[in-house]
Length: 257
Image (cartoon, rainbow, N blue to C red; front, side, top):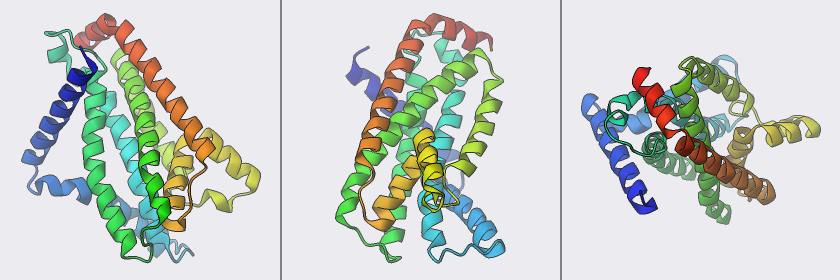
């Protein structure tokens, strides 16, 4: 399968899945933005209203962190079962196994684009007007996408082999939620602790990068961003190779799951 045909199939599968999901819901496509906003509302109630966070800009701070983290977490969790969910099709047609998790990731990307538009509108009306630093946003989104794609394909392969891994992934997302700076500012930590967190937790760095660009108006750490992009690209290449080499084995595991 050519690269062009692969991405055409990815787009069509994502589009049809989005259309099917919207048709099952009364509010349809509005859930693309309503669901993440409800998550933000819940955590705002807990951390600002009940726990009385001292940050005056906590809502904007929370939205930048939570809305971007949701993209990562929901994409990986959703893609983790993509091979098993496609067992019927996999049993009939020999398709590239990467097609299914990537289509799931692409579906999440289309939803996230609507969320990003809402976030930018909210920030613009809340005292954070567009600055030249916003031009770095596509680069951060691209690196974020590479990381999501690599994790999604790895998760799909592992869950296909051992279904129990899906539970581990859900627990890992909860752990990452509270250690990625979604509810706290990593820059408020001791310098050594901050450097360790941003170095060993890619999502903590990306969440901080979104905030630096959108709220502070400064460029992210470009060296760190480039390194993370190279790492994400390498992860995508590796997981693609694994899915290609283990195609028949994964097909058998998916069919017999």
